[in-house]
Image (cartoon, rainbow, N blue to C red):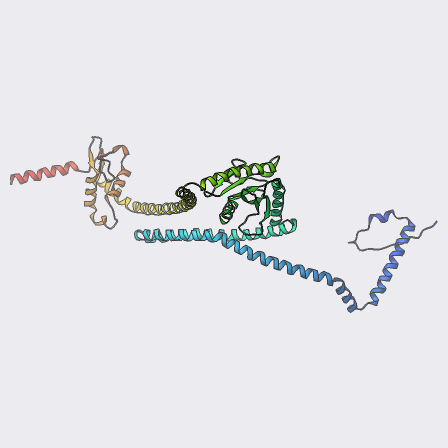
Length: 471
């Protein structure tokens, strides 16, 4: 059988499928024939359509997709708008308290700065500028942190929407359902009834009624410890329902913060009402048995409270007063801790201010000393000489001599006796100084020095005395 060869040209950018090399001559002919017929029919269809018809056809085919995209864009805009509003409210609540604390600290610092301004207005102004820069940096960091928080919240919201369909209310309902199953253990108790109260504010998740007493129950299905806020919530709920003697805070899979030293703990909030904390109930081999044990304990405690009601009214009032005082003491302790934190922050700021002011004063003192050191060196070389005969001169005598010789510049350069003592210490060894007493302004003896021409001065004085006696 003979074969015809056909040369086919394709663009350089196009790649030839590897499978073509495996086709037989008959398959090559079939491929060319089918492809040619399809391309021919396609050209006829395209040629028969006008430009308007092509446009309308494409428009009709993509109309549904365009509408879907528009709806998705509208939903995303509304979601982003609501998320932004919620985020703004949360950020305002979170940082409002911090800004108020900063304002109070600023007021305290302003009062302290007024006192410093009386001594050195220029130095205080420089310090105020430094503090303003620090707070500007702090505010800039807060703004940056707010921006990062917004971005994180937006990402978290998108992440939650995409990967989970289980809301907080669903988790709560799972916990309530799990506790309901455990509570079926009381079905043989007299008067038992489990009443769902989770839709009523201030009533907990359930009310369990018995002939003996009723119980308010709040079940938690957390992945972490049950926080302090939930303990405060059940306490307020129990106080609102003053006819209920007990409230059970049941954590199914975790412990309860600050009340996890034992599986079951009790807290009396007054002489008639008690909160029972049950930690990690689902971890027990028989959770229902644990609930029955808690109920029998509550029964004995209830009898105790009933007997206590029969006691003297004055004693009951004293007990109620004690519980109220303990609550106030707890609140005072919280306030004291917050106050101490604020005071420590203020102390640190004041210490920073003192350090900066000290550096300023040291710098100014150093400039004064450097400007006056040449005058002192010239005077010392002209009037003082070293000796080895044990001669001493009192620092006060040196000061009076220097003051007499340089009286015209003492006031101009603001030289004092204390500064002069520093000059002396820079010229002699520390071993040559003998302190007269331990006061801060004490004079000292300087050993192994004497005034220049002190002997001739003494001789001239004696001669003058002799001449006066002769006369």
